Image (cartoon, rainbow, N blue to C red; front, side, top):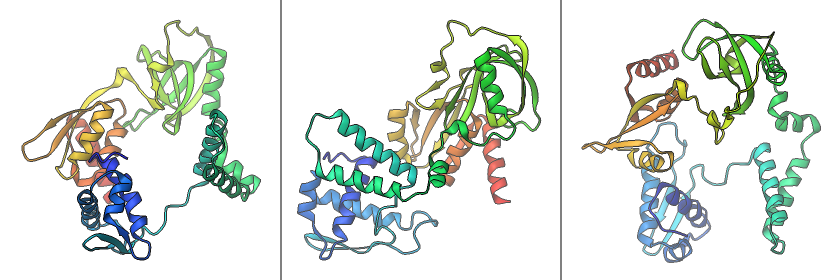
Length: 324
């Protein structure tokens, strides 16, 4: 295992060290370091980080974690809520079972006893659910509630290549606008359904989230999907991308979370600027104002939208709403 000092590597080490050190008598620092391919000093640094994080946020565990470090051993005296892993949800259990079966089917290696035992336990857990509970937990998204039949109307319009008249509420708007769209396709991404198609009002291809569509009704007008239309230009990697609406938003992050932001920036492609006080400023290309609000509030007081002013206002209004 790599000893690289990144947040993900540190978490991986801690997920090995804490359970091992929770056993009676604790664990040898030298043995742990050898198992993880790192040094005892780095493990001690990881444990120091855990101790500091106990007081990092008031919403943490009610009981403090207690760690005893001796000359060559470490022992978790009180786990403070870390005494066992979180139980998998039914969906997570199903995903695990499918992955294990898929790995076995795609591999030419002989069966692995530990993998087979894990698969048996996962499927045994799923077998305990009633049929109605399974349907509720694993029903496909397209059979989810659609009380206004909006989604059904949009899907039918896309299949029949018929224009659709809709009442649509844009993000941040209070009133619905009447539009006529040519829904080229209806896709599921980021936990919601979206219609992707030509908008007569905007005179371009736009993306419409179905739960923002108040009403939808097919018309007699027909359309043809352009040959150069590619749904991948609007939905990629499970995320919705709306190029015509995108804006550049600058967010400042405190030095306390700067390392985490730098790591994110490397694989998400964020442009960052280092400040003298240790803070960092990242520039995000976004199309959904709601993403900026949710992202900023995730970090609480450690993140602040710098520009544009309209996005600062959205975050401020969201905070006021939470405060009541």
